Length: 315
Image 1: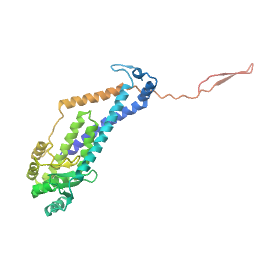
Image 2 (image 1 turned 30 degrees about the vertical axis):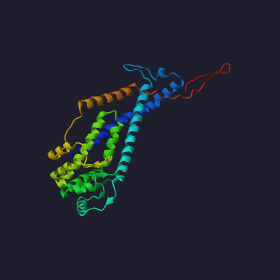
Image 3 (image 1 turned 90 degrees about the horizontal axis):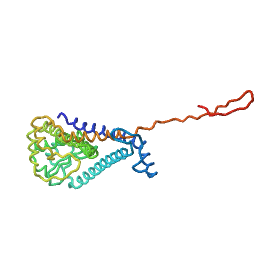
Image 4 (image 1 turned 90 degrees about the vertical axis):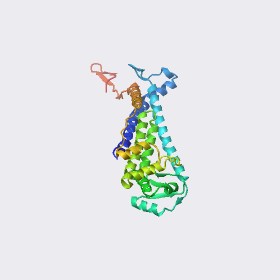
């Protein structure tokens, strides 16, 4: 389905641009302004300390923008790492409590062979089927879903997860969640991340419909409505009810729904970017690097008297 990869790489592009801009500002802040700020604190000048000259609109160029930029960078790194660690730990704990592995049924073995995937059947009565694993994703199927679905529906479900395995979608899902939380101050990132996650499900739905047919996939989606499912962290789950209407509509039209961010998201994101640019403009310019060359004295000798006079000279 068109637009699945594009949605993911749109998130990557936005994150790279914003992070690169913040990195440049952070380097400038540490290189010049932070030193001035520390010197000001040591001299007990505090808020009166300024590191530059008068500038129109923003007043004195001071250590304030440098501190703000470094705080934003620190918050970005902390939020991203916290999301990465928490999501990974939650997923591992959830998978560990899914119950013991069971021997696959003849029907399941046949579908595995048809799709070319390995499926772990767990003895859990809840209804779910998911793709888990960052580098080497695998499909996990519950006994509850195996007993609920018929052969065509089960084929559609496993074909959906097989598409996630081929694209390593659990890793992508973790990446976009980290990006969304790291740039929490930029609403556009959260919107693009949600769109990328939905696009991932739509792409897997399209692949499953090609293998098992759209009616079987729609029946499988509707069969899990209201069923008890575990919270599985960052795994991609076929039974997820997020954007279910969009998924069914996409199966009907065979295209990715086109949506635009709301005006409030666009305006808020533009304001955030403007503030970051203003902080960059507020930073003092780097002081020019002056190279001091040694000065050699010049000796003047009066040939009449034979007296030598030494005067400072140039290099």
